[in-house]
Length: 178
Image (tube, rainbow, N blue to C red):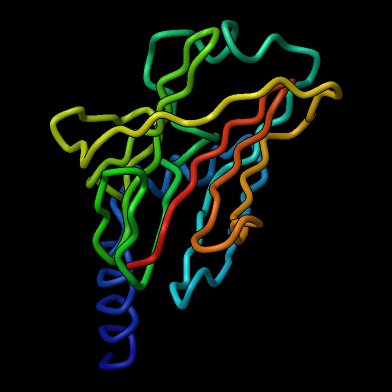
């Protein structure tokens, strides 16, 4: 009897640790997930995200509408995690986790860093925004089939770059470790 109670208590604790809606949502994932990591000037930085495929679809201005906040990937909200403070342009990001969203037009990308974490990607609350930073956008000559995020050391010197590629678009944002 005691062993059974311990199992039930253990299951209850595990169930309470993850929101029920998120558990159900994780079971419905349509895209593979990945965590990319890099150490930039002593800061350990990672991004965990869903990696959808184009599958012949029009991405930007299509399944990712212009002028609306996008979850920057698939499924759960994309998470940036850092063990040191970072500067994205003039935006200071404390150590810890933030969600990444994007606001895209036909010519621009803006990275939205949001304090809310652990939510399904479509559960965006603007009041939780830490801030927004414009990204540099360029057109690729060869389409990228699967949405890809990379973190790399800035080849020009100090800091790093967050790079997002999909369809024929590459968006880049420089950052520095504090």
